[in-house]
Image (cartoon, rainbow, N blue to C red; front, side, top):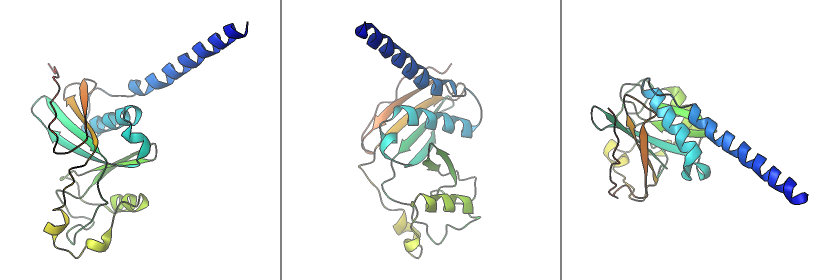
Length: 186
C-alpha cells in the first residue's frame, strides 16, 4: 500500500514539475520589435542555461546576420563597465550599454547606438555593482582595448519572421569557432 502511495505521489510531483517548466515556453512571443525578441531570448536563457543560475549580470549582443536571421549572444561579462569621459547622460556610444532588462533579479544589458545613455542605466549598473568610474579620466582607446578570450555564454539564432523559431549554441571561448545551426526561416 505504501509503495502505491509513493508511486502516486511521484507521478503527481512529475506532473507538477512538467507543468511549471513548460509554462515559460508559452510566454514567448512570435513577432514584434527588437525588445520582444531580446525578452524571448532572456526568458529562454533564464529557464534553460546553467550559466543563469550562478550569475546575476549578463551582457547581451545583437548581430543582424542576414535578412532572415538575427543572432543574439548572452555572455557573462569579464569585467564591470568602465565609463570614459565621453560616456555621459544624453550622449551616444557604440559600446556603453543603453538598454537593459531585469528578469528574476538578473540584469541583462546591451548597447543600442540609437538610444542615448540615461541616468537610469547608470543607476541600474550601480545597483548591481557593475560600473567603475575610476577609469573615467583614461583615454577612450585604453578603456575599450581589453579583450577576454575566456568568455562564456549562449548564442541564439532567431528567425526574424517568427521569433519562436530559433536555435542556440553554447560558447566557452569568444575565439572558439562555432557552427551556425541550420535554421529554416521561410
